[in-house]
Length: 224
Image (cartoon, rainbow, N blue to C red; front, side, top):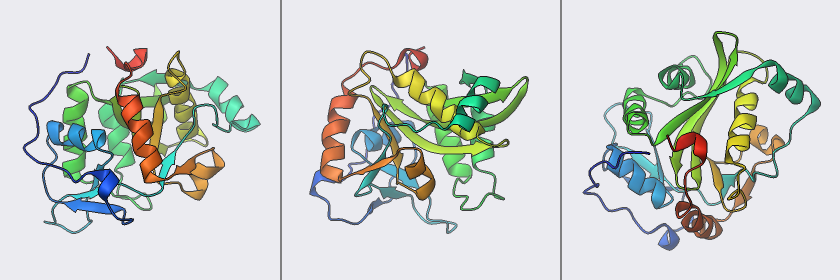
């Protein structure tokens, strides 16, 4: 089971009282207790992209969510899923490093984010779902699991469909007896994610679903 870190000294704004701006707070830190408090409040961090800036905290309205029964799996993706092996937490640092590759378009993961989520992983809160071809990591994703919430952070691929195979694997891990109440959060809907079945949920509805999800047990794959 995950280990509880010291509680955060910071207080986040109540997400249900915010205006419609996605950026809702600036400052605080990236300690494990702060990150967990943020996710439980419906927030997540991203760097501003400017060296020396404080942490930016977001609570998008609307929020991108993937219904576990709504994942769209094409014929070619099914074929790729049969060819690749899905593993959990065997290469967390490598997955985060690949997601943070500065050569990627829109790369945003900096050294501080990598270090923060590595600490969360060591405590049992952050996880990677990986796609392997033999002994070669070809795709994956990572995120934070708290109760019935899985907050996806980033994904990458080195082969066609490999990141999608990891997503298929994640959905399979979450589809247990609590699947109807689990929450797979992807932050924002993009055209690519929409093609996979991601929908937009208004912030108030997301917070209601989040409160329910947080009371659920962890999926077996992430409970240790």
